[in-house]
Image (tube, rainbow, N blue to C red; front, side, top):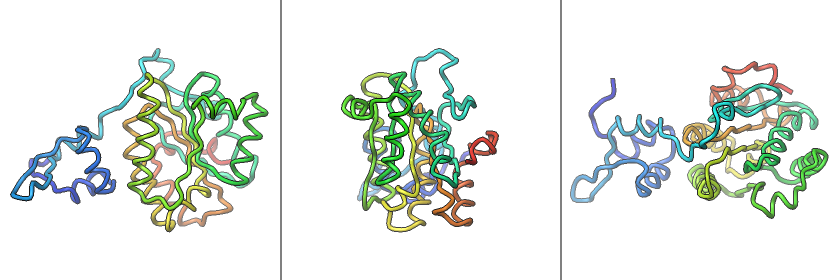
Length: 246
């Protein structure tokens, strides 16, 4: 049963497993109802509103029923899936992610790739081999290369929401996101901050018509981190896990 008690901003953030900055931002944008109480006009949130917010969806594409999934390694993955493929070779890291991005770009669906340096170059080369004109895709806005050095959890989520809002403002579509976490790791102050970001992203992305692959290079992360990664990607356990290990 949902309690009738009102939660303050800190408690609401803990309830949704996001930062207080995200709660304030969603409240200011009118996405999350809030009451103002006391002389200081502090925000209070009803648990029922928080539960409803978790179920809200933003920018749902008006597409045929069969378009409610995308292909990842030959498997039909439903929208709002947040997966964490794990790989141990350079080629293994490209096996799922490159066809996933290329298929979307050919269909006119926006793709987002968080990668840097040599990893990014590998993607560019592999996408070119899939007959994708990477330069043109970036110029047209179909492919966005993402990177936020020095990011905080709240800042990274705000940037994602800004990017998603921009493309969805042009009309309903499906978003395809690939994050190379060995690259994204360097954007945060610590592994703990990166994992907190993953947990918050898991809540935020449920509101968007998206499929996300958070790619983990097993050569870069220890077993404890990989275990926490699996816990923060519950969709992994609804799929055939063998197909997501490269």
